[in-house]
Image (cartoon, rainbow, N blue to C red; front, top):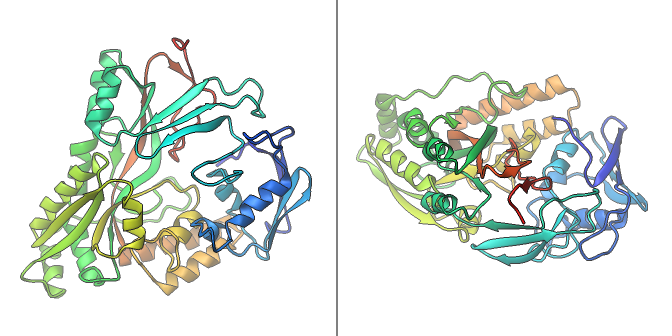
Length: 427
C-alpha cells in the first residue's frame, strides 16, 4: 500500500519504527472555524484511552508511550517497541474531531448538517477545506436503504447518483437501459458465520468443523452474486504477502454428520442464529440453514436492524451463531488484534487462544517484513484449525453510479471519497 498526504502533509519515521512525526497541512481548520493544531490532534488521540469514553479503537494504539505536540503543526507518536503498522491504522480512519460522535466537528471537505439515524445523513460543502478548489459537490446526502428492492427503486426513479451494493444480477439490465454505470474492484469485505465459542454447541471445535463441511459456499456465491464475489478460505487471499497456503474446506456431508455424532448430537439440535436485515444476508442465512438441515442442525434465524445489531452481536451472548460481516482491514495487526485476540474489541465469537495472542503481539513489533508475514501466516493456520468463524464469501467492491457522474472510483477497503465527484447535470 502506498500512503499519500491528507491532513498530515508529511511524516518521518525514526528509531527502528518507534518514533513517528507528522506535520499538519498549513491553514487547515475545523468546521467550527478553529484552526487544526497539533495540540487538538494529540488531544483527540489521547481521548481514545479515556476509560469514560470506552473507545473500541483504544487497542489499535495500545502500548504507545506518548502522543504529543512537539510544535504548533507537528505531532509525535512515540512507542517503546517498533510499531510498523501505525500508518495503516492512521490511514483507515479520521480521528480528528472537535465534538462528540453524534455531532462531529471535523476538518474534512464536508460538514455534517443533518443526521436522522436509520434514515439519512446530510453533509454540506466546507468552504474552509485546506485543499484548493475542493470539494466539487455542494451537498452530499447519504440515504440508508438496506433492502435490495429499495435500492433498485431509487435507481429506477433517478433519485440517487451513487449506489453501494447494487444487486449483482441487476447490473447488466440497468447498464443496458442507460440507467447505471458500474465499477468494481477486488476487496476484503467478507461475510462469515461466527460461532459463539463460549457456549454449546460451538464451544466444541468438532461442531464448528461439521458446519464448515456442510455448507456449500460455491453455490451461495453462484446463486447470489453473479460473478462479483468469491469463496475465501483465509483472512488474506492469494496475492497478498500475508496469504497462507491453505486448501479449501471441502464439502463433505458424511464427514460433517460424523463430527456431529462425535460431538454428542446424533439426535440433532437447534441453533439460535442471528443476522442483519441487510440484503442479501437474510437470503444467504436461509441457504446455509437449508444446507445444515442435511446434517441434523436446525437454524432458528432471527433478523435484526442496526441498531440493535451491534450491541447484540458484541455485548449479548444469547446467540450461538451469527452471520457477521467483516470489514476490510488494511493490515493484519488491525484485523487480528481487534477480532481474534482474547481481549479484542471486535471479538463477537468470544474466541480465545493464548498461542494466537502471543503470535499477534510478536508480529506487531516485528520490523522485518518477511518474518512478520510468516508470523501472520502462522496465525491464519491456527484460525483454520480452530474455526471461530466459517468464511463464507468475499464480495467485490461493486458500486453503481449514474452515467452523468464523474470522478468516483470504488476503493478495495470499501471507503468512499466523494471529494472530487461531480455530475454533468448538477445545477
